[in-house]
Image (cartoon, rainbow, N blue to C red; front, side, top):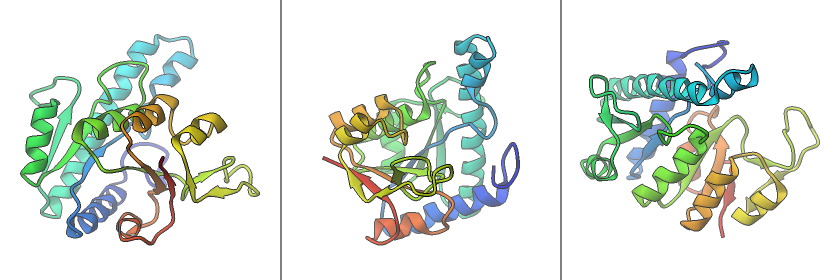
Length: 220
């Protein structure tokens, strides 16, 4: 979304694609889960008395739009990428299966997961943890609005303290809202570290992968 109030800022999508390219140049295999909040949030329908299931389906469609945009940006950089959707729409992109995802990853493609989990009431955080487990990922990176996990929202509470590291249980026990509880629990059960960093810092992904950068690591 960038500085816009809505939609897709192509310059931001291109910059994120550039960050992915930097990481790939380090020899890292990357898959990406995208959200859709810049276009539509399903909970907004429910908060106004609408049907949550319908709202979540609309949000899933928004993630497909973002996934196609990211694939376009990656393609411009000469990176082979594929969109796999949890909701079947064969005229637009391939449907997700673990076998297909692993095959595309082995072929050197960036796999972009769209459609969340394909189920209402689950966030794209849960989708990210689920896909990480299915792909056998060594870590789950969450690019977010701030450079790690804080005791409170640092934008609202300037005195909030930042954590360098936490365990999955600590995140759950402290009620830290960086990811929903289902996602954190799934990552814990599959022994997948979660690395929380700012998506707004160009090149930060590669810096963190090489041991620098600024992030909070959630690991047991």
